[in-house]
Length: 169
Image (cartoon, rainbow, N blue to C red; front, side, top):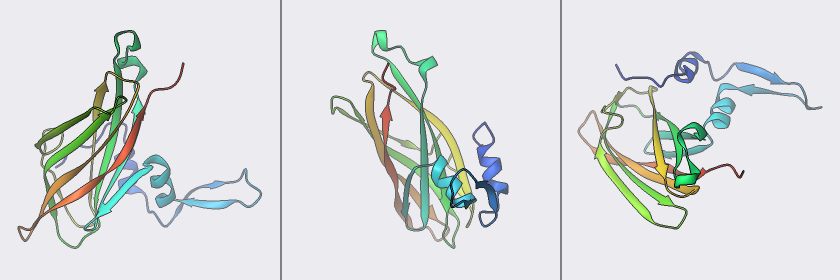
């Protein structure tokens, strides 16, 4: 069983029926119903879909783990990998391209994510949270996952590019 991110967003979305309204936005003259899919888009603004696999990313600056006086800024990112295909898939490895505010690129490659190689059933998902320190207050991340389906076919899935931005004091 894959580990789920703390904070129970994963549990919430696992139970949410995306066709039913979560809340109505009544402050607009022309109120509209916000569905679970709209909420996912608001919570995970960075999205890429490749070969039926959707990768959603939300990023947060962590002031409590940052110390600009020693050139240390830290972000956490929550990733949700959704299998919209007809076959189970397993995430085998990751490749990240991390660019700092000076344009210096750091590449990170490794097996699985957060110590796991999750198996994701059709219509299933896997969530995890990780972090990224930089010595500049801005940067970006993008990358790919190497996946294998139940027939043994391997393929790469894009991780959308997302900005790492520290608030301006």
